[in-house]
Image 1 (spheres, rainbow, N blue to C red):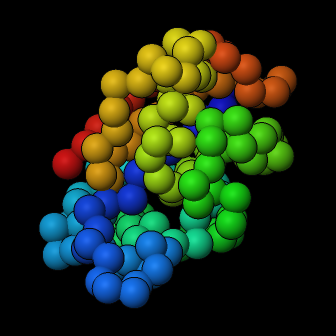
Image 2 (tube, one colour; image 1 turned 90 degrees about the horizontal axis):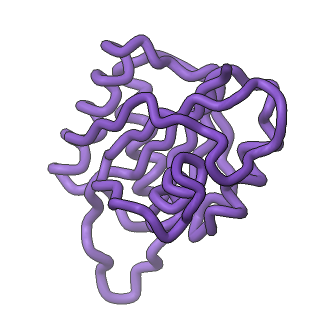
Length: 158
């Protein structure tokens, strides 16, 4: 089995006039949530082998706070994560099949729909993923991502 950890970015500030959505920073609450997410990952011994992160400021800041708790991990910014559909995210995960424990830091609704699709087989059957929420999915070592292929082994939120 391999593990896929999906982390939604923590609470972000509202956009300032003229500020692109990509540039929204974490709020003070979001910084605390991201640190708590990192502590939870460390306590559960869920340190990833590789992190794929959306290029948005709020996801990068979420990842920085998490890494402050778990230590350095190989990481890559992936433009495809920003505003991604579940299908786009599944394709991205499939490209990293050799990674035993992959962490994806991204956004809703893509993340919560991917969890639902992989767990229940229905992307519309999502229950929500709060800011800084973490879903841990166990999936077979071999084979592509398919609906219903994964089991949800943990779900956490601050």
